[in-house]
Length: 116
Length: 110
Image 1 (cartoon, rainbow over the protein chains, first blue to last red):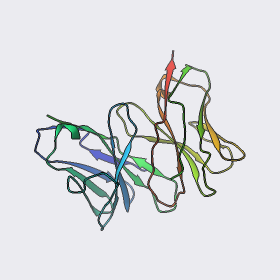
Image 2 (cartoon, helix red, strand yellow):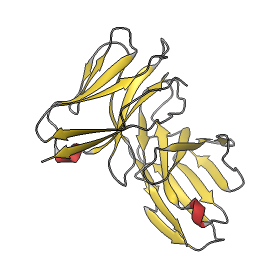
Image 3 (tube, chains in turn red, blue):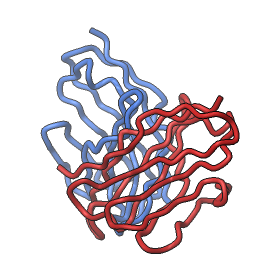
């Protein structure tokens, strides 16, 4: 089946540094990808919708200058957490639609970010 | 987006069937009912989806009420590996975003 590969699976960084998370569709083209954030014991919160070749659409309350999203190709979207702080520590998950008009959403395995 | 309501948690015994309910009284005619589950420290995985008719696949069955205001995910024989958070989500299948509610945390006892 369609697979989305997310890398890295976990990362620890120092406060003030930036971290990039990659999300790749391995055997299909993903024109649209989604980025979620999940805090412990909570549900997934949608951060933004990433469209290939255009600017991402951010959900209300998500700082676009802090969470930079780039979707430069049909198989790769990246999320960069800039100037990370301990409160950005979370589980970040990407998702892709298998094709417009289909029901299929596939998810990456997630990235555990810890900012120290 | 139409909202869904699920119990926060449920318990089941291994090898027994599990019925996970979901209320979606504001569902529109074009909304599909999707179920995903999330195992600890993993991304969600697709379980099943349907529109009006009941659906079966190798993982589960989906029973949809005639008025479509509620649905039930049925795991026919729960295993320890089925312990997860189960999310019931509505989507119009037009490539839009999926909005997750709180889901139901299912625990399975041996």
